Structure formats: structure tokens, C-alpha cells
Image 1 (cartoon, rainbow, N blue to C red):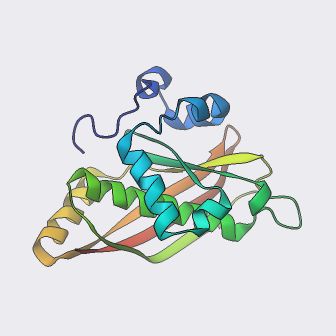
Image 2 (cartoon, rainbow, N blue to C red):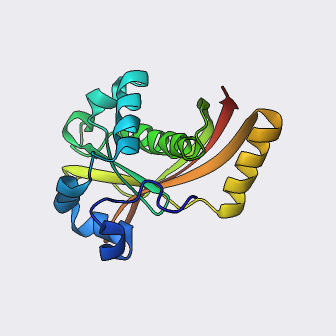
Image 3 (spheres, rainbow, N blue to C red):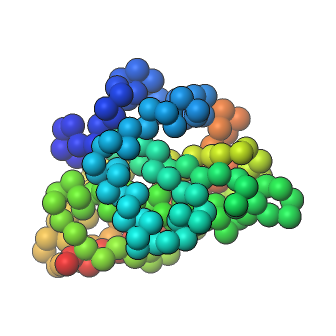
Length: 186
């Protein structure tokens, strides 16, 4: 990834060490500092709301992009089930969209565009989510995977990449998702 791409304007990446721990322990502070004045994140939010209108109804919002880790948040209330925990389908959708957004930002980084679709996804639900709001965070992509992704995209006009996403707190994971995304260059 290029130096400085989509870095936090608030310096959270330098101040917090592990971004995942920061999200888990300082969620409300993050919401006030997530800096939607970052044009790439604001553009991603607008793209989601325009191209995937369900994201607005679900309350999905781009939270941050720090060290290659895209994070999005979602409230429990419009996404709860009869047990007053997060609906499994909503958790799957959130993780799928975080993966999609990660690929979208990879393309934006290289000033490229393309049609992004999920080819397959696998999700593991470890425990129910009861928190009023929660964050799904993409795990860092291995540099060799990103290099191969762009090499294939340039030579063949399409490519694929796997993205893993976690929803967790200080007690451990709620959900782990792994999705395989395909891109056709436009």
C-alpha cells in the first residue's frame, strides 16, 4: 500500500497501537473522531448508500481505515432477531460489505475501478452479539496476495482476492468471516 493512503487524520493509528483494541475499548470516542472529512472514506460511504441501499437501512457506516484495516459499524436495533441479539444475516451482510469495501479501497489506491462481486463466503458465529453497536474490521491483507491481485488484474483484466473480517470485543471474537472477491476491470 502506498504510504499515507487513507491515514487517520486524528492520529489514532499512532496513538492507539492495536486498532482492534482501540475499537473495542474506545468505541464512542472513535465515532466522534472517525473523520468522515477523509474524502476516500466519505466516497466509500456514498458509494455503499447509492449502490447498496440496504446499507443505509441497516445503519452500516464506515468507521475507519487504519493500516489497511477497514472498519464499519452497525447498530443492533434495526438488525436484531427475536432473541434481541444481532441477526445472523445482518452480521453476514456487514462482514461481506466490509470485505467489498476493502477491495474497493484497494482499487481506489491504484486509481482503478472495476466490478466487485463476492464469489463465496464462509462465516463462523462464535457467540451472540448483544452490544448496542458493533464494529466489523477487515484483517490485514498479506502483501503477496495484494501484489498477485494487481498483477492478475493488469494482465488478465480480472482478479480475485480473499478478505477476512472479524467482529470481536475484549473477550474475543463474535464472528469470523472469510470472503473471496472477484474484480473485473472497467
